[in-house]
Length: 252
Image 1 (cartoon, rainbow, N blue to C red):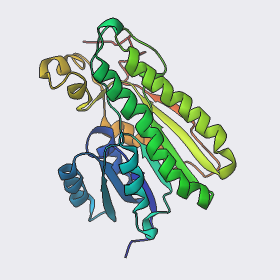
Image 2: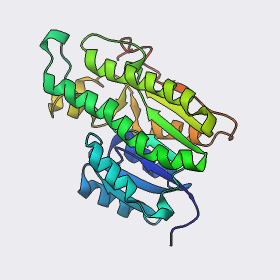
Image 3: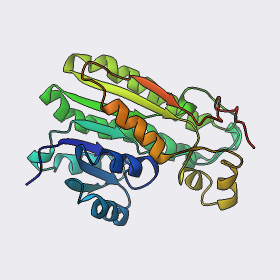
Image 4: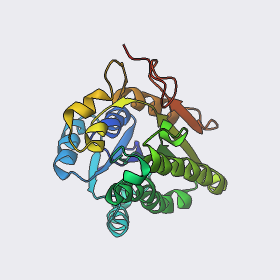
C-alpha cells in the first residue's frame, strides 16, 4: 500500500535537473517518474525505493495520445497528484536562423512547448477536481533574453513563460499554484544533446566557468514547493555567480 505522502509527477526525470529533483523531493513525496528511457527510469526507481514509494511512466511527452493514456491509467491511489514538475525539454543545434534545421526546430517546439501542454492538460484534470495543486514549469534564462543563434530555443522558452502566466491566471480560481524556475548555465547532459554528442563543443560551454549543477536547481525547486500555502514563488531566475545575463559570463 502506498504511503500517505503527497504525490509529485516529474517529467524528464532520468537525468540532469529532473533526476536531481526526484532525489530532492523523495523525502516529502511519493514519486511518479516520467521519461523516455525505460532503463534509466527503472534504475532511478531502484535508487529511490528505500526513501519513498515510486512508480514510473515510460512515454515521450511529444506523443499526446500516449501521454494521456499513461496518465489516465494511473491507479486511483496515484491520481491525486499534488505537484507537477514540467522539466522535460531540450535544445537542438545552435545555428543562425537561416541555417537552422527544420527537424531541430520541430524537436524543440514539440518537446518544450507542446509536450508541456500535453502533460499539464492530463494532470490538471485531477487537480481541478481536487481544487488544489502546484505546477512548476522549468523555463530558462533563454525565455527571458534572446541571444545570437538561440532563436527557436529561445522562442520555445519564451512560450513557456507566456504559458506559465496564462495558466496562473486561468487556474487561479481552482486554488492551483503555478510557478516557473528559470536556470542559467547548468552543467548537465543538456549540451551533449544540443551539440549531438560533440564532446569538445559541449565542454566549451562551461569552459572557465563554475556553472550550476542539477542539484542547485533542485534545491530551488524544493524551496518553491515548501513555501507556506499562501505564498507562491511565481517566477524565479537562477544563475551561477559568474553569469550576469544570457550573454555576459565571467570566464577564468
